[in-house]
Length: 387
Image: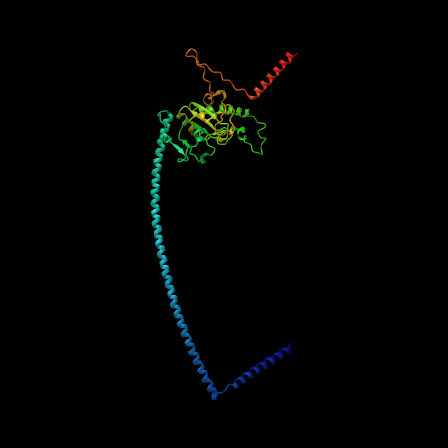
């Protein structure tokens, strides 16, 4: 280790000596101040410095001019931006002012509308109270005339012709979408409970092609038996409110007539009482919906061929096919009777004219048979005479 340290000291000393000798040689290479070349070189250096300073001044001047121009352009842009901002602020202030004015006008309009609605509500309340008082008077018997608000008609299409089926049956297969006009009375003696009577025999009668065997083990007698229970269960509830003149239940298969129940009262008061009490009540797990309707003629509403069982459409008919009520209730009103022949005139009052006997024309086949029989008889007579 000692030898290495000594070697390093020697190496460092030699390196410092070489550096000193190199620096001394460089100093010896520069000309001396008294030399002419040195003075010439100094002059050249001064000229170069002055030239450089002049170029720097020119460059600085150009850069300053460019900066001034750019500053002027920036100031102009800034002023334009400020002007646009001022305009936008002004427009925004004007819009805010307009919005405030419109909001004030809208609030005033709403306040007026609220006042108007309150007045209308007060008037409606007064009218409702007056209507309810008139209705109570009418139902209690103090007034003979029903309220005027009920003596109106609601029309679906006032500008079109009346629907012929709706006029007769108060029902239409197209409902309110029908192209004809339907008139709904505000009040009448007849109440209609749509699809009130339901039974398996009516709901599953129109079976589809995938369920053709659903009615094989079912008979109409079961439907009639269930209808009898329905009749004795429902009719007394309607009779609590007045005298029931007609009670009809449809057994049609069509949806708009299936199970429809018509209840006709003797007077309007009883019908209104029943509607007020029974509308929206529940029966058999279903809510009952009542409406007033008009049936001008039961004879025109009920299918005339139903009682004879000759209706070509069956229960798919658009006229009413009704159940026969038990114990012949209301039978005289809706079973059409056959026309009886007029009895012959009595001989006590006038002589009856003699009736001419009209001979019927015999068919050709009978004439041929008669001619053959005659020929056989003649032939047999001739044979006997010859014998």
